[in-house]
Image (cartoon, rainbow, N blue to C red; front, side, top):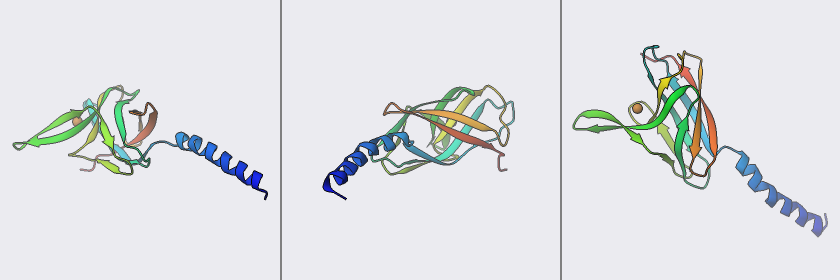
Length: 146
Ligand SMILES: [Cu+2]
């Protein structure tokens, strides 16, 4: 292969790399689920592992869902033996790290559902990130383990 062609391929490769990266979702979601609740319950929760595979810190600054009036990020705070939920303005996922949202800790709170969700249903969440992009994730509803 002559030198010119080799350079051309190298330059094309460099030009295409950023495009390929921007198309991939910034956050990788694993083990997402929302425990099924009786229809009278107007607050559901979502749990998952969120991995930031990028080289930059990512903040989730807002979450919306077409199926709920409001979606909030909560942390459970225990103070003097009392447990309470504290709304978080954003959720920070450091570069290359995994954040675990699990019962009794960080969670996504889903307020005022527009319908009843049963085992096997899927809740769609739109995450707004601090870099201005949006990412849609799917959270399967699962029977509550008693
Ligand atoms: Cu909560």
